[in-house]
Picture (cartoon, helix red, strand yellow):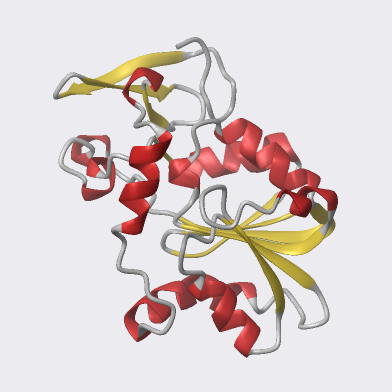
Length: 210
């Protein structure tokens, strides 16, 4: 491991080893990330996602997703086109916004692998419980930036780390497909590097304006 996978800074150190799994910490952006040698293979990753109980019509899941969509709707209009980046096998967020008259497409490398999205531009992009799965976050954010309009919005929901001492027993860390963990400082660094404006409307919700 040479550089931080989020911000590319060289100042990284081994943070903790848990059951032979090595986690690194970036001293600049304060992200933590799993050593690449411990990543699950793609087949195992896909099978894990299929275990998720994320049904499109399930009200509990919809209420959870509304924590992301409600603040985003203050900044977008129904005339604009959007994309759910990493929508999973049951794209409930897409259906929720579509029901309200928003124009939004699906993309997921496992379940909706439509590469045509990279030939388009979007006014808003959502990533709900997605960025923690990025094997190469720096590259993914650059890909998202390339398809996001100027003055467009990227809306992210992920559980933020608040205390290093809680990392070992954190439920979020124990998911085998979660490989990178962010702090508020991490997203501030991303915003600075990408020339985005950051908004933090509520816990675990980050909005970026390009």
